[in-house]
Image (cartoon, rainbow over all chains, first blue to last red; front, side, top):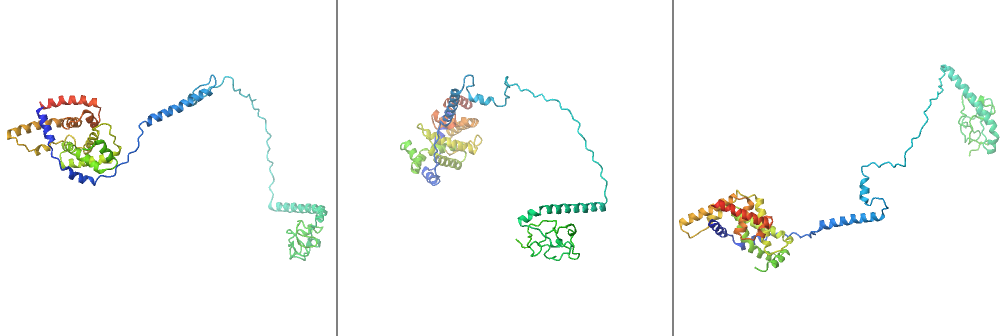
Amino acid sequence: MENWEEYKKVYKTIQIPDVNTEWENIRHRLPRQQKHRFTYYFRYATAFAAVVLIIGAGVVSASQKAQPGEALYSLKQFTSSFGQIKPKKPDTIIQKKVTPPLIKKPTPTITPTPTPKQSPAQSSAKIEKDVQGAHIENTNRENGNQGTDTAKGQQNTNSSQTNGSGNNTNTQSGNDNQGQGNGNTGQGKSDESHGNSDNAHSNSNGNSGDNSDKGNGSGKSK
Amino acid sequence: MQNLPELLQKAKQGDKKAFGILYKEYYQRIYRYCKTNLYKDDVAEDVCQETFIRAWKSLPSFVMTETGTFQAYLFRIARNLIIDLGRKKKEFSLAFYEDIETDEDHIEQIERKDNIARVKQALAKLNEIDRQIVILRYFEEMSHSEVAKIIGIKEGALRVRTMRLLTKIKGLLS
C-alpha cells in the first residue's frame, strides 16, 4: 500500500488556482435563488387516511340504516349490480296471455265497374247541364231566403237581370258593387255587345245567382 | 470559518458574502475532485464553478441535518456534473502527476513514477462508482455516511462495497 500513500500525496498537492480571483469571477454570475416551496412530506399518508375515514363513515352509516337481512355494505350492494342479471323472483311468474287464433274473415271485394268513355263534346254538354241545374237551384234558394236578406237590409239587385229582357244598360256600374244605381255582383258580368249576360236568361226573378253582401237595395254603398 | 449553520442561513437568504466564505472554504476540495475526474484544467474549473452556481441556486431548498452534509451536497452536485459531461473511465486522467516538482534524485523519481503508474492503472480498471468511493473515502478522507450520500447508496452497502474494493485494489497492485 506504499503506492497508495504516494498517490494520495500526489492528490493532495494538486495545484489550485487562486480562490479569490475565482470568486470574483463567479460572484457576478450568481443567478437569483430558486424559491423554496413548502413540501408536506405526509401528504400521501394524509390523503390515504382521509379516504379510509370517508369509506368507513359511509359503511357505518349504511349499517345503521340497514334492515335485518339486508347487506350492510353499500359498496358491495352497488358493485354487485354491475353486469349481473337480477334473478327472477319466485312469486311473480309472468303469465302469458292466451290469445285466440285469428280467423280470417272473407273480405268483400269491390270490383270497379268499367265506365263508358265519353267524347269531349258529350262531356261539355253534360257540364253545361250541371251548371244550369246548379243555377236554378241557387235562384230557388235565393228566393226562398229573400225575406231574411231584406230583413238584414241587404237586398241584392241586379239591374241587368231585373230588366228581364236581358238588356244591360248600366254596364259600367254593373260590376261595381259600390255603384250608385245598380249594385251588381261579380258574377253579374255583363256583355256589352250582346246586352245579355249568361246568367240573365236563367234569372227570372231579377236576382243574380251570386249574392252580394255589399250591394244595397237603395244603391248606396256602405 | 464562521459557524457553518449561520453562514448557510445567511446564504439561503441571498447573502453573497456568506456564500463567498463557503466558496473559499470548499473550493479547493471540489476543484481537486473535479481535476481528478476530468483531464483538463479549464474543464475542471468550469465544472467547479458550475457546481457552486447550482449550489447557490438550489440553496433555499437545502436542509442541513448533520454537520458536513453541505460538503456532501457540493460533492454530489459536482459528481452529477461530471457524469453529465460523460467523462468517465476513458477520460480518467492523472495529468496532475507531471506537475509535481520534487527534490528527489533521479532513481527515486523513477520508482515513484512507477508506483503511481500502478495506482493509475488500478484505478482505471475500476468502474465509476468504485473509483469515486476510493477518491472520496481515501483521498478526501470523508466519512462513510458522507460518501454514501454523495454516491447515493446506503451506508451499510457502502461499507461492504469498500471492503470488497480494498481487496480488489490489493490484488491489482500486487
